[in-house]
View 1 (cartoon, helix red, strand yellow):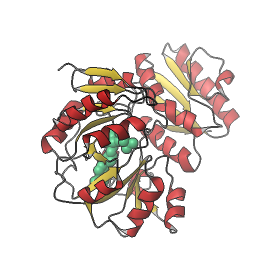
View 2: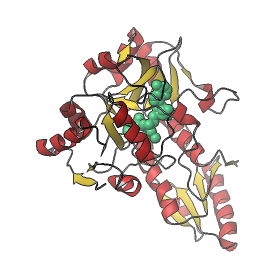
View 3: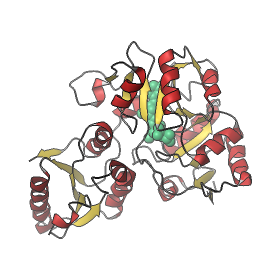
Length: 351
Ligand code: TXA
Ligand code: MG
């Protein structure tokens, strides 16, 4: 299949370009488009056949459900039943934005879209191109991240081209995304609202909005549990670079000294070594490792926005060992660490 790659300036969206993309969606084709979190691979959410094409293009396991993207609150009533007061509150507060709710689904939503579950994940993205496309197509757009299954989510159109060129009808290049990690997912189908995937919208923000405590799925915060994560996608190994990624955590001077020592050892043994550092610490490393500056500690979003690009670069540069500082911290830092821990297969050294 020939993939049409079109550039759209998010500040100057041309009607004809969006119409062409919307037409593909209506015809049950696949269009990759930018959102504020990561690029999505979109298809008509009400079509079993279109959903099937998404799974085939990504090589995605069929039990891993898709998020339905909407452009208008009214669409919720075409997708979900039992929309509670809590659900209304968080949708009002955080949409459009990097925030997904899981609700009980209506029968019209095909089980191909929801991976066989009787619930549906819904999000209104905060990106002018995504919103223009959804509103022009005038349907819900099912869209997982636009990467091959198991690779880091795409934060640049180049990443989508790398993974899916030739497999899908169109890629809209809208430039780099802003947040860089996927939306927060909140399950509202149980007794207590539960975070299934941490993201930019934090637990504290949701609790402030609802005026009560909520919980995080214990299976995703490393608490010992026999339960599988409630978001099926969280059980898969994700985002791992080909080389060994090791996180070194603790006091920042000691971290830098330890990373320097470990990296030097591996370099002496003849390996290709990388270090993921911040603007504040990059100059502390005196060895011959490839230094990848991820962002500044003054601004967590500068770190999240670069994370997946840097993980992809580690593979392009054939790095065999990658040492990274940790970016722990409450709030949004916890969501960044969730992705880093997965990429590192939980390999941590504490100093
Ligand atoms: O920021 C985002 O959410 C991006 C952009 C494109 O919007 N999308 C995204 O989609 O990250 P994806 O498919 O890569 O991740 C969706 C996650 C998976 O872990 C999936 O298991 C979970 O959402 N999910 C979807 N529907 C669900 C449901 N009904 N119940 C529980 N988890 C669900
Ligand atoms: Mg994904």
